[in-house]
Length: 201
Ligand SMILES: [Zn+2]
Ligand SMILES: [Zn+2]
Image 1 (cartoon, protein in one colour):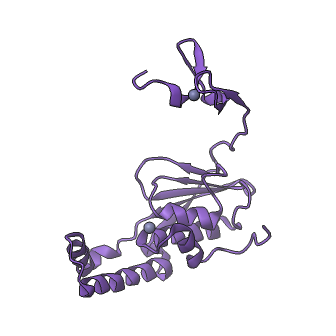
Image 2: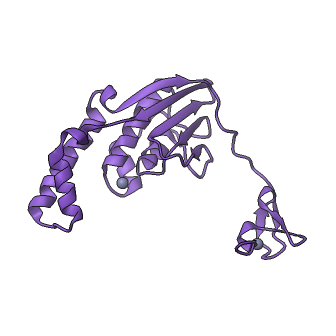
């Protein structure tokens, strides 16, 4: 991979996620503003770390744009249900907190009514098209509207979670599968994997 400085496009994140949606647009804006505030390029390795406080569609955009992924271990999920994202640059030793608060739907009762109609089973082309048009308008506002209308950015102390560890495996004494040593648990005098711990045990 050589294109380290190329920022992925909305199309790129849509390809990864599978569809375009409000959550993906929100995550894209959060990621772009976060990168800009950190003043760094996308993460080829583990120099960027993302701590995300929800597991919505938005997180897929963050993975693509920042290069912070589940597999690389530089995407950390805290199940706190907030629309808050904290990004750290290990190179610059800086951190930035992005809190997303897009509220355009509150000023758009028609959109809410259309959503309700669709949820109640109205599959007419009129409803579907009207909803798609209004949703697209929100996506445009999220992607291109004034930053303050979508999110708040603030700097935070450099305090990232620990780097991903590479660890040796030992066989589970029940199933025999090689298992990260730190994930084995003592059970009935044997060191076994969590999958082999009996329910309730
Ligand atoms: Zn989605
Ligand atoms: Zn096992």
